[in-house]
Amino acid sequence: MKLPPNSSVLFDSQTIRSRILEIAEKVRQYYASCDLGEIEMVWIAEGARHFADALFNAMNLSIKMRSIKVSSYGKSFESSGDVKIYDSINDIKARRVLLVDDILDTGLTAKTVIAKLKSNGVEEVKTCFLLNKAEKNKGCLKPDFEGFEIPDKYVFGFGLDIAGEYRDLPDIMAFDY
Image (cartoon, rainbow, N blue to C red; front, side, top):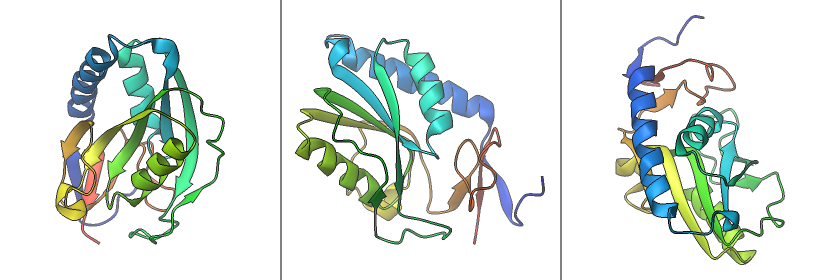
């Protein structure tokens, strides 16, 4: 598979896996005193699939897990500013939700999903992002659990895509567009 010009490895697969183990331990410690029957991991499809699967397996907690389809990008490199939730989340009855996503970019997607979950009666929503573009989102949403802080570059691989391509790369790549 030919990679886009000016792309390079930002995090290799071993670095990603090691960091996921660290995040999983922090999540496990946080939820150690909770009634696990009240916790549900909700991950945002499709980008967070690789991260959510690896995190779920590393946490080794007996909690529910489900995905929801949410989009604000379409085929563009920038968020449209219009967040669409394609799956119903009205039936999430867990008192605590761990919202997992691949990247915190503008924060709009996460804020929209959190607001919807809370309006449905979810008591607590904790957030977990593999990547955080803190410089771009200017702290609009502070992740509860975070993998890596990254510069404002377009990233792909390990679940993240460019118009549906490159999701299955084992590394996280970056390029200037």
